[in-house]
Length: 90
Picture (cartoon, rainbow, N blue to C red):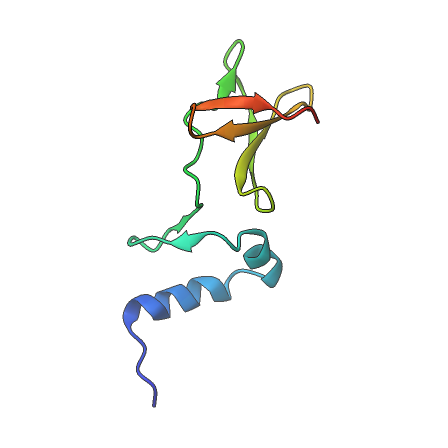
């Protein structure tokens, strides 16, 4: 009988609740010491624009970045270096 440490068991249990598609969509994420999923780039600290309107924020696995949409469906990429959103032209 193989021995599995508790953290590995918890990780395997969490992964078993995710579909293969979910794991592929977030392949760069990892579990932290609290057993929570973390992106390789911290979540944006600025989540609103203009008159306190919220961006629709989602993870872009291919680009390894957070992407946001405004209410006009304009796309922005989060820059952790400048803590600001940059228009992507899409």
